[in-house]
Amino acid sequence: MSGLDKIISKILADAQSRGELEIAAAKTDAELFLASEASLASAQAEKRITLAKVDAKAQTARNRSAAKLQTKRLLLQERNRIIDGVLADVRASVAALPDTEYFLMLERFICAHAQKESGTVILNKRDMSRLPAGFASSLSSELSTQLTVSETPGDFDAGCVLIYGEVEYNGTLDALISEKKDELRDLLNKELFSE
Image 1 (spheres, rainbow, N blue to C red):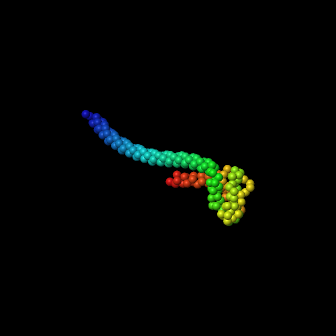
Image 2: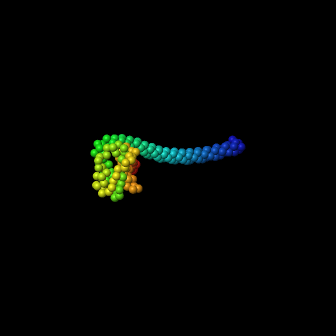
Image 3: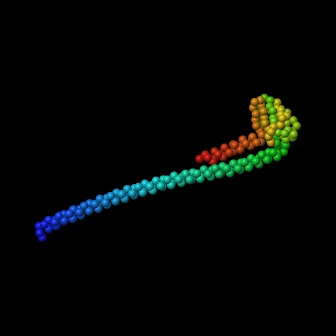
């Protein structure tokens, strides 16, 4: 082998050796890069999975809360329907009371709201026609105040209106039922939505 061939052979061997070193370094760099990217991708995937789980839990909680609220609304609606039905039955039964019991009910209302001054009771047209004799005078002596029955009938189905000066007590059946209905509904609202 000639000197030139030796030099070329040496240059080729050095180039090959250097090329192999560079290829090995490039492989190492590529492996490090791939490992780093794989680790980064894995971390990103875990983060996305964690966020998805958090979002799913939050959505589930919102759905449960909405379902619970809807259930409460439906329960309240049904209870209100029941209350309305019961109060309608009460209204019908009060309207059908015998005269004696009906006027005892009016007496209890009047006695519960009596004042020290003179008062006036307003009845509807039907009740005025069936008013027991001495109703006002009996109440006046019981209450120790002057109580009169207005000659002008009120525009309501049942019950009475009691007036003492500027103060008026609405004892009509509709007013009393409305008051109780509101009380019952408020009570149900507190019970259902107290959580």
